[in-house]
Length: 178
View 1 (cartoon, helix red, strand yellow):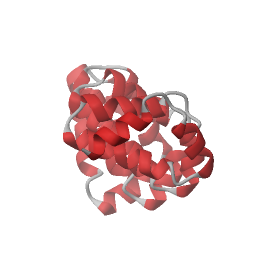
View 2 (cartoon, rainbow, N blue to C red):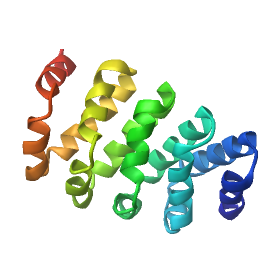
View 3 (cartoon, helix red, strand yellow):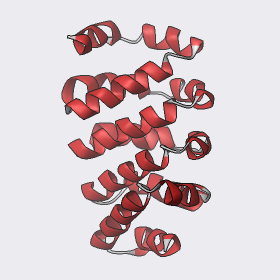
């Protein structure tokens, strides 16, 4: 089934892409499916590609699928080393629908909960600003997930210095506590 959904995401109409991404997001809600889906690079790569193209619903469901896949400890380490994943999620946080932004923040939080991912993620251009922006402009769920991602990222000593010197971080964190 996943091969057919990946094919639809690459070759289908916009509606087919939307349904395929939605099916992948829903399938990834199951822990058993999540493990199987995470064992192949093709799914993650198709979802990353979908974040940059297609209608907003495709981006939203692709971000949701990445968030769900990153709930697995095995998957999050593998996904964290996948080229372009952080940039795709940052892009969704700037350009996606409100739901896509929420899911992208959740995916970043899930990925950052893995210690091996933190340093690489912290050195990704734009990640801190995207998370800071999310804490001001998005839903409560998005704010919680963005704050969670920042909390995990600051568990890494190198990230603490970088994040601590990011413009607006202190005001954002204080506002988030009020």
